[in-house]
Amino acid sequence: MIDFKKMIAEAIAKTLEIDVKEIEMSIENPKGADNGDYAFPCFRLAKTLRKAPPMIAEEIKTKIKIDENQITKIEVVGGYINFFVNKEALAKQVLQEIAQNEEYGKSEMGKEKNIVIDYSAPNIAKPFHIGHLRSTVIGAALYKIYKYLGYNVTGVNHLGDYGTQFGKLIEGYKKWGSEYNIDENPIDELTKIYIRINQACKEDESILEECRNNFKKLEDGDSYCVELWNKFKDASLKEFQKVYDLLGSKFDSWNGEAFYADKMPEIVELLEMSGRLVESEGARIIDLENQGMAPCIIEKSNSSSTYATRDLAAIMYRARTYNFDKALYVTSYEQVLHFKQIFETAKLLGLDEKYTNGLEHVPFGMVLQKEGKMSTREGNVIKLEELLNEAMSRAKNIIEEKNPELENKEEVAKKVGIGAVIFNDLANSRVKDEIFDWDTILNFQGETGPYVQYTYVRTKSVIEKAGGIPDINKVNSNYLLDDASNRILKLIYNFEDILIQVTDKNEPSILSRYLIDVAKAYSNFYNENKIIVDDKGIQNARVYLTYAVGKVLKLGASLLGIEMPDKM
Ligand code: ARG
Image (cartoon, rainbow, N blue to C red; front, side, top):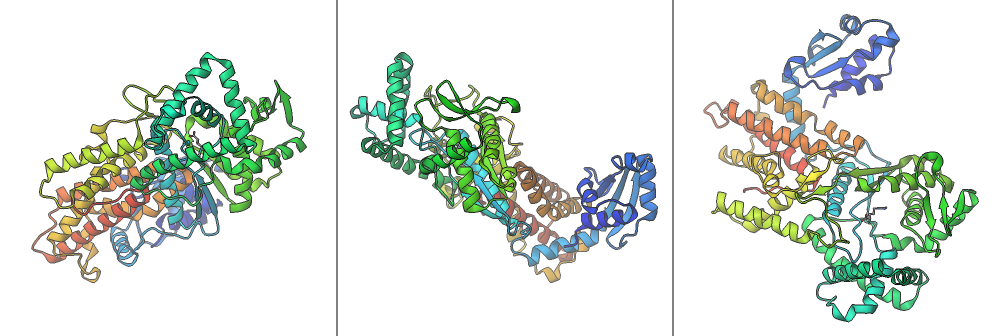
């Protein structure tokens, strides 16, 4: 397809002595149709050119040479130059591209670039909670979108399978293991033990000491501790898998924290060599006061390792194994400090700057219930598997009510219920806290997953009523020059650009918002235009546009991890 933005940028660049890339980056898509399809703001140039922005705009307008078949009108409004794309050319191109390209918007731009995405990462023997769901959903969406743009992506599930909590669990199990039915219901029972031992630790310092020693023993390979650890891990993974199956999650690597046990001594050595590893209250730390941060603890006073040291070993391992250009970490913003500390400390490991510059924390907000936050230690958690089951059963009830005759209700309810939960996690900018509320999430009319699915289903039924997708050679795109059609065509044209924006900001909500925009634009088109009409020329064009909308909705949703039902 013609890249209008680039074409405009190049034409502007020829009139000024400025880098094309820079111009291209500042070109905007104006909101209302009155201001054209692309706008170039001249404000930033005012300083260097020593002229008022409207004057610069006028000057560019007079000097610019641009293909008039593509850009039909150029207008100066204040400090902006607005460009109007030829509607016919746009319509024709978009439909051609949709017809020819099964994987519309796919690109090779990320070729030869390696991206590691660290996401999901629940903790063994603890419930897979709603924060891990968010990490799983955001991470998976980024994974799919980077891949679609041609990047070489590795998804890592950095399981929390190591650390003092295992010392605690082992202690609790030793004390009361026989009272709990761990084989039957591992995570619930282990959580009970965990809560109980935490309480005991609070009351008795010596028990806490025992727990710490257990973890030390585990690190030293004590066979009893290792055996228990394996038992906890296997049981937990089996439970996590149920959630992953429902969400359709896959990972390329399951190397959790324990994987780095034998890779930490090297890290400690490198840090020693840097001369920055110092003793403090019996522990060994990297002092980060100059960076305005609390110290990064490398070794605890009983010489056991820390979460941070394991992450440093993971950075080293990922640099060597995946040669990453970017390594993303998707966790809640509660870990902002942790990642700042380890990214700073990683600079002392002697790694190439390529790697230390490529490290990026992708934080997201809390999921709040109306009652507030939930935590494992207190024991008031929603279990994720139950939550997903509830989503499906609520979706089923709604379908039962709206469309009792529907076939495969179970399957549709699964797509709608799970899709609703996923969409909700991605619907707003990720750093915002999210309120989890069933009625909002499952509202078919709201800005929700079910609304996007519903719109898709509607496109399907329009096509069915029309007797199928028309042959592209019989489609005259000049029937699609009205505002409602043009709005859709512009959105579809922007699809790839939207995906690029997602990867620039690691912000999948840009795609979710886009899908809502497309769905709304289609509803508007549907209300404005009769689709099935006597004039077959008009009908073919409108049905084809309908098909294009369905295609983009389905593609976009699948990149977010959401499946589309054909009927609902
Ligand atoms: N297991 C951690 C948690 O539940 C998340 C791990 C994130 N990844 C990492 N490399 N630190 O909070």
